[in-house]
Image 1 (tube, helix red, strand yellow):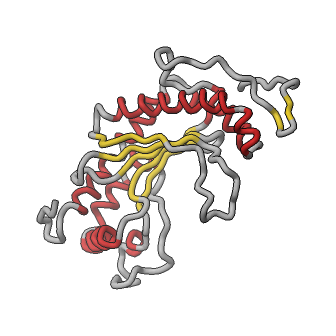
Image 2 (cartoon, helix red, strand yellow; image 1 turned 45 degrees about the vertical axis):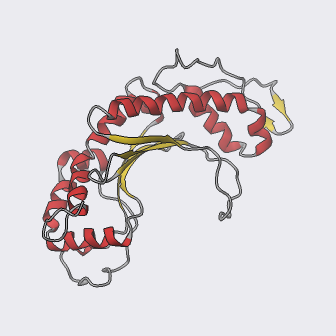
Length: 250
């Protein structure tokens, strides 16, 4: 962890000593402790004055994270086709939020898969004590959710096999996402797959410790985690690109 200079104190809180900024040509794909240290300090000083005073430190940390994101994209491109990778801005959208703190206290990014024949997207999130990667279907539209539920109702065993696989359970635990309190409209509340039919989102994720995030092999671990999502993504892609009779619609 980067040490703070006790003398570098201003009226808006602690100012972080600026680390040596790595140039893009020399920048490693691994993340340095200064990235997590900046985010820790930001969570304690989430205001514009402190952020502006520490803008060079933010920029150095953000540049490291962008290089990390590019390395993840390069690694994932060996086993999947990616349309685009985006690193998210640190500035929060305050228009409809009761929380008026101006900055996110994590760095994050995502990747969308190429074409409608590859459904699902990837997400990576670095935050002290709360880092994870995830993927799936955050907000399926009404047509997609209806198609998914129709398929589950007709044949729940295929999805159960995927999410019950030992590697899936070891990596992701269980299927996640918001759920209805009871069966969705049009489906029997006593259906044997009602536990799956109640999902409004279909998400999977894996958490990482700070030590894992800073390890030299973190890019490889993230890429391998995304690779392990593929059986789930392949299932969802087949469902969402065919009709109830299995006829392609894309």
